[in-house]
Length: 203
Image (cartoon, rainbow, N blue to C red; front, side):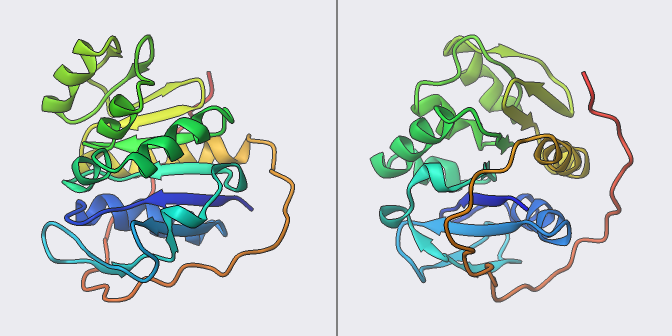
């Protein structure tokens, strides 16, 4: 099973964290919430979710993860101002392992200087920033481009999550050094009620 790095800051979009997080864990994958400091309490923009960071960005080598997930909300705007997160994204993308970002998540990819020439999507205002930085933007529920998976908004969450799971199924497993402790976020106040779609994401 995969080990997924989830980059998270304050005021993340609650559902964009919760739905993919739950889908990944239900499929047996390990998801580690990475914040500015280990143990930091992070609160969603709508106040429905409160979680604690499992690891500090200082302590996580990018090449020890199989996939990277960046939820939206105001979290990416905070993270893009922190050079440690920007460098993590650059180094992780160099591994060519899956990178998944939704809504405002691609803002972190913009700051890392990685979007030029990539086919992708994001929240409508982020789409303009992507275009101005050389990305080929399409307004679709989910866009697959090489190792990247991007989506626009909360209504795309199920198809986005399913695309990430399908991508992980076809990604060669990284050699395990040691099985990390599984993340246990606290403070969940609302469980999503959506069911997964059976969609084919083959080329």
